[in-house]
Length: 336
Image 1 (tube, helix red, strand yellow):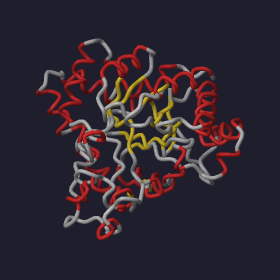
Image 2 (image 1 turned 180 degrees about the vertical axis):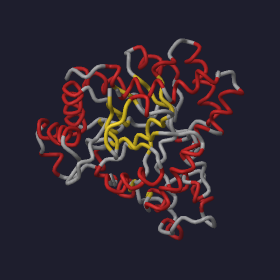
Image 3 (image 1 turned 60 degrees about the horizontal axis):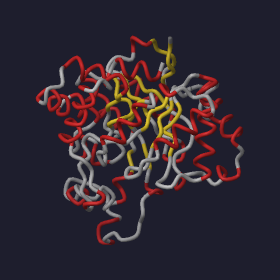
Image 4 (image 1 turned 90 degrees about the vertical axis):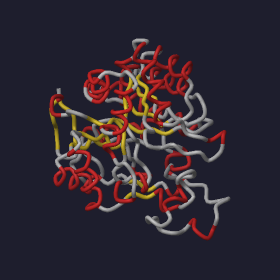
């Protein structure tokens, strides 16, 4: 079976080592709450002299929410390639900066396969027309991206998503989910779903998607590793879906209520889930969406899961085969 990439179809075997959810270009500035920030530096450009300001609060500087520049992206992909990576699933949507032509150039120059997504992100990012669009119109958008090409290009989406949901899932978000479920049922495409970091909306998401015929094994509930809730994660897995540990490299502490788990904590929960037999339903990635996660700005880059995180996993009793299966077989089985 084949999967669509920015450069056309590739076989299952050509996917190789894959990061299941990243952003190569993204503009999340419109989703950032601009209130309550220190005006003296909120509008500065990120550099090595001020990147420490975003160690705890990633949006203390608005520019951190922007990734751009083909040459820089190529270099970041080359680091990933040189660490053994072959494929990136880019989950960026139009509302937050999807750029198929630029991704094609990055793929050509870096040698990394790039798989694109389609659909709509969460409510705050929605284009105004989403509110009045009918479910079938939203489904038609996804069909076109998958079957014909994105925008004016012939570059086709290989997955659906990341479809977005808020802390309280809005009617428009439910409409987009319904459209995604319909199209997944028709095409067999896998669906990535952004869920709010601190709530437990995964069950509602699964219900909406499966009601339209989407298969549980083609659904991934993202961002379950920010606030670690083992019982919630197990309950999702027991529904037959994938879950994604996708915040490696993000160890923010805005407040006790809004802290991110540390990478070591993620690895310890991952080990428990592997021991409990859930290994075939877990995906791993960094979900890079911040400027300071790029190596150019002092971050660990897309290869973080192939270097430090992998070493941490092996030191904590996860075998090489177990770990690499999450980055190879699981990704292939999810998207194809």
